[in-house]
Amino acid sequence: MTDVQALMRENYPGNTWADVAERDGRLPPVLAQQSNPAQDLSDIPFERYIGQDFFEAEFEHVWKRVWQFACRDEYLEEPGDFFVYDIGRLSAVIVKTDTGLKAFYNSCLHRGTKLKPSGSCGWSPDITCPFHNWSWNLDGSLKNIPCDFEFPQVERDKAGLTSVQVESWNGMVFVNFDADAPPLVAYLEVLPDHFRNWDLRGWYVATHVRKHLPGNWKLSMEAFMEAYHTPFVHPEMTNVVGDHNMQHDIFSRHVSRDLCAMATASPTAQKSMSEQELLDMMLVGDGKMIGARAKVPEGKTARWVMAQQLRERMKSEFDLDYSGHSVPEMIDSIKYHVFPNVMIYPAPGLCLVQQFRPDGHDRDHSIFDQYVLHPKPRDGKYEVAEVEELGEDEAFASLESMDPFLASVLDQDTDIMRAQREGMYTSGKGAQTLSSYQESRIRHFHKTLGEYMQDASA
Ligand code: FES
Ligand SMILES: [Fe+2]
Image 1 (cartoon, rainbow, N blue to C red):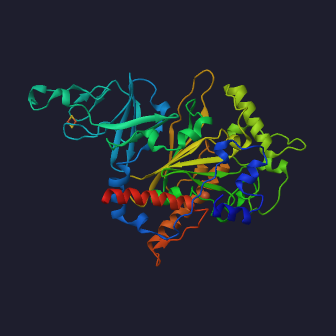
Image 2: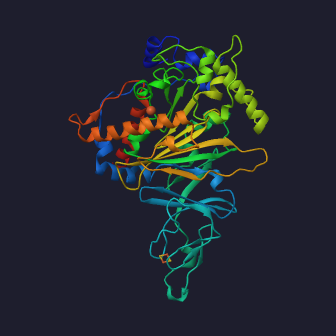
Image 3: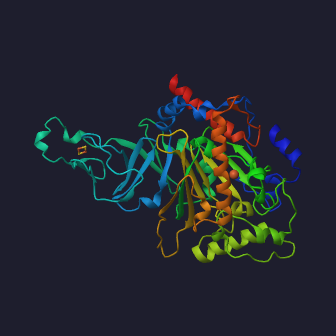
């Protein structure tokens, strides 16, 4: 155990995430791991959030070099299906071909026109430019040039679309604009090993909400990387969900994790609740998945009932066997962050993907995509959710598709993000001071970010 973890146990005796989870039974090896190496505690300059030069450099040194989540597999099932992934001014068209996935820069080889509109997806038999109708086959090879006799200089067999790397892992499609980048599996480091018990390929996007947020993409994302703010911004959560007692793990350059206990009071709770009250009040990100509330039998906990109920539902409704999964694996908020901008929650009680990107080419605004995943039904019939888009001033709470409690929590976060951005601009100090444990993953993220920026300028 590292010093900081010992400090957590000293400050929250019997109530760290591991303490709570171990009371449910023996932890599986992946969840029993704890890793939080000591880090340099220096302040981090606000320049990283509000500096235009830093923002521009991120595109050159980060976005053009990293593997980044683009979409789920289910957008790309039949040959001809396409999905346009955008990051700032960069855009890639991902297509499903007879032989697998391909991706290309979303730019015509004639005079540069964007081939498919940003943010679009759908089906087409080929890729045809809307300007003068140059067209390419799904594999990227040149198909046709109108009046081709006028282009003697174009070598047909070398006029294929320019490739972008694309790979799928666990139902998730990632792209990399760097042609020389090592394979995705190397980039994901410990993640494939940690996800052996969580196969998300049989799941699909049941709800997709896209919200425009009032802060730099990192500022927005970092609100999801700590629960230090929870008792102050979301005081209603403290009686039923962990916060300051969450576990924060840093595994490798690109991967970190936090573990948050559901149906248990946090150390900052205002009142103590019975197990039945915990179950009745339980807020889950995806209430639809847990099902109706039940009675807590004598000697059992709300956590046990929720896990059991969920296992039964998974078996009866989806024919998925979770009998070997522990209580925390079923119901807790288990959140993996993959550098730079995606969070994956694999537990069936709260199965989500969250992604944070700059909003266009604007350092002060970001786009937050939240994909709620449900298991594909037995009959194989499902429809991938249409995106529900919310402007900066539109509330999550206005959406019927969202769990009302989760929606109100996200709206509280949005207000704080705006205040944080405005405060950064008027700061006399010019830098942030992060805590050694609860905000350690934000610090680790900045370390990796700094390495990418440094490597590139070297
Ligand atoms: S710009 Fe694409 S065909 Fe002319
Ligand atoms: Fe929050």
